[in-house]
Length: 554
Image: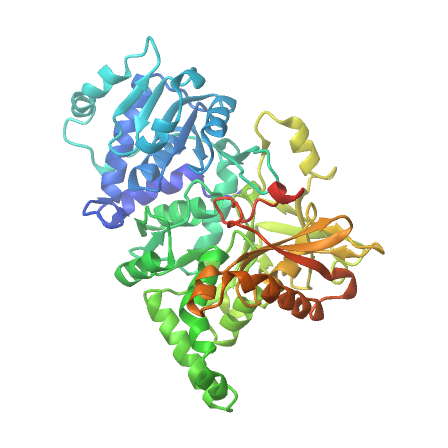
């Protein structure tokens, strides 16, 4: 058990950092200090108390990332309720299901999402509150929430006659073994499950982050990944709120153009990325330089190449604000070409590994210790790892973990909980890989996506896709099995096609040449028999992994 109490961390932090800026909606003038956040939490706690919300009641939260999203989250967990963050990309039917399955009594929601929901499909919800100003959007028949809200200012004055101060902060007494969050996974395999995370699971992530010396009191972060996802929630909300860090909430689709402008203005001290975003920045900023004829010649000249790489590194660092200590990449596998190039130019990045069921962190290396191809060492003192293989260092097997960060189970789903744990209590990640003697993890692919070759060989489509994505005019790809053969589905990079003046009708010929070049890089049993053009971008989860299960019968 982690010795630091999860809720007490925030009680202490709001007191210690009272006057420091905590939350800003990027592009807007209002900033909440830690004291402002504590006052808003006190108002919500008073509302919960007046509405007789009990400790352990579930409270759902869905909407665009914003300061009040963070405040609603912190208010629920510090009251002793269980927060149910929902990804706003879920369709309305899934949202209805999650709210009902979790038996949520309150819902905090953005106005846009609320317009898409149906009141009669969430009949057990007692009250619905807007994330724009916390007004009551809906109350169940018989409730008097709207009336209570009108008298809340008076009740605050009555409760705190001298005004709310840091000395008034007092949060729930809740042991770390209690569930504080139910996070419904999006995943890439279809059905969503409610991951029960305890205070201990989340405290394990936060206290480990404190040992890394990457974020300090008064630092800045910019949040552009969905907070309802465990990766972003842990390191763009829970860690900053515990450390006294100022978080800017982007609240927009993180296109490279928008992001680079935000990096320039905010100048964050730590950056969290998913691979897709970093790959897009690489393609837009760096690749055009590398493909110029003069640059290709210069890079073949000894000594000159290192100076050029240093210039490229400086340009990239400056573009990301210039003040960050590290870029942490997680959420999915990164393109190998991009990984190799960033490592070659000594860009300060690292790739971690985690899953919602571990709230999320499993392994990590500081960028100075990062080994290409790996996703870091198992968290020392927090987690343990083993490979379901008779030779875990050389022979691929399922990655299994245990430790402080591992979830309690799936909410109201004992069968799924039983299936995800081994008989001796280790969590089966569903990922395949090996480890080295430093317990550094190397992922090969997902057990559910692995394809069995004609002679029983294990084929990992993700590895083939990584190579295919590096070939000309390929934006993204998916390798599937069709009638015993491997087929590559490709969505072309139409921007590059159009910029070079190539006709779209020439793409099939180009892709056939790509197929020939790809197969030179593969073992014979991995050979791709055909490349088919796909008409649209592949549908993705919020962490930008392709929803592979949608294309299994293509």
